[in-house]
Image (cartoon, rainbow, N blue to C red; front, side, top):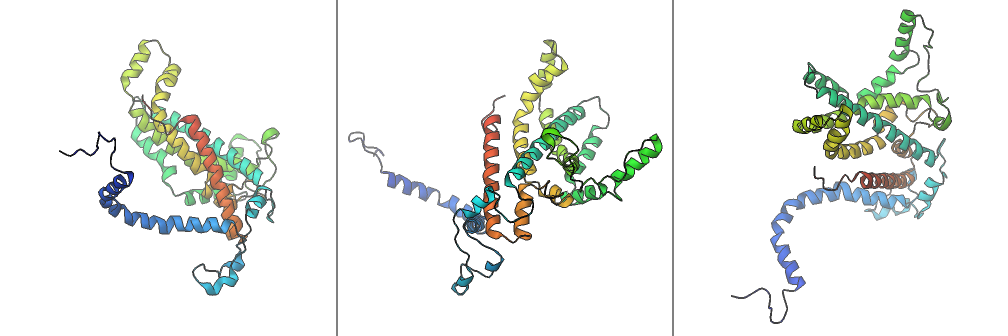
Length: 348
């Protein structure tokens, strides 16, 4: 019998031979994934590569007739500007009204954190309430509470925008009804989405009234997702753990922190990371309710990128801006992952 390794000489098969053998064995697998890989290259990687190239040019509306595959359009080619677009973005050297990158970033972070706090806390608390066996009609409540998440974001955003209308909106009309019933004199013509005067001073003085309207809207839209995740996690917790904790004399709050939180953590942490990305790039709520107003004070990074493309036609700057947004979100995700250890193996 011929051994694959000659122990007398201490030699084995060369790395080239091992690589060739591995390639031959994986030909079938490559044949299966090749169509998907080709499709990904065409619809994903090529546009991304083109965007990266655009980020280092002064690509504008005058360059739309340029085509990399057609030499006759070379005269419409944009100029290579290197890192100038990135420098202009970070130093606010862009001719756009009310543009301030660092204020945008701060607002985007505050927007994301404030939403996640409410999404997670409300989702877990309501899931705990619905998990109670003493609650009658739990299935009905679960179906009703999922509706905000199931409604298309575009429809929900426009509905809330109409509700916040200062003349005919349901919010001001409801305040008028309350005034008639209770005898109060609350204002019924509040400009919820256009008033630039911040309702709260101090460190929150940069947040206009429209921010709180957007916050209420996105809380209504976002907590059902966390509730669904938390409900599934709660139903997988063995009841014996609560019985053992109760025998040890643990209170309800102690059982929550000692049993419930550790057991739902594997499900909630990835959901929180996903919610962070969704909220950070939540285009629908911001754009369809305030369009970044008043005076750009509720603009987030993704809506500003949209503005650079469709309103300003600064395609090169917009491509660079999108790369900056990706880098910011990547850093936030890595920090979140490092703190929560979401991608590490978890043993209950």
